[in-house]
Amino acid sequence: MVRPREFDEEKALDAAMQIFWKKGFDATSLTDLTTAMGIQRPSIYSAFGDKKELFEAALRKYTRFHASYVRAKLQTSPSVKESFRAFFEGMVSEQYEGCNRGCFCLNTMVELAPHDEKFEILTREHQMYLAAIFQETIERGIRSGELEEGKNAKTLAQTLVVSLIGLTVMMKSRPERSFVDNSVSVILTLLE
Image (cartoon, rainbow, N blue to C red; front, side):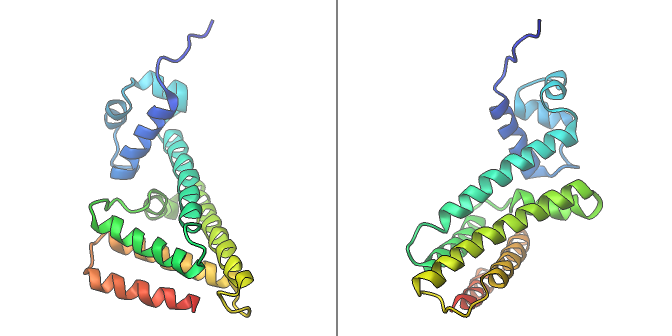
């Protein structure tokens, strides 16, 4: 008879996600994982597989959370322009207020996607999902009359995702705040 697990898998996965997010895949050791997760190696292997499988599970958990977070942020205001402004400015503020880890998915895109097809696909899927969320929001603005009818919602959404990715990666080097704020202002002119 199989013994029931003596730990909360979701809490353990959350802990793994946090340490991978902070250190990246390569720099995270199994000792880092066992310490953060509060479980031993055999339990990690039994519940999640090897380090790469655990990383994949953590990344998938993060992308689900992140997509829900982005969707909710873009629905905070009836104004589409205001929602995007609050979203981009909020992302910048978070980075300057001490949370300078960037986006776990984008960190993975930079670290692993260039040489690991699975992570190339997973990170690209998240980019496409964000573009779909942005497109839905833009289409809402077109329907309401806030955005002009001739806007190409799909292309605009993709451009905003590229801008978001660029900003998020650039923020890792802590550029001058005015540099970033001016860039966000110009990015948001795409919605005019």
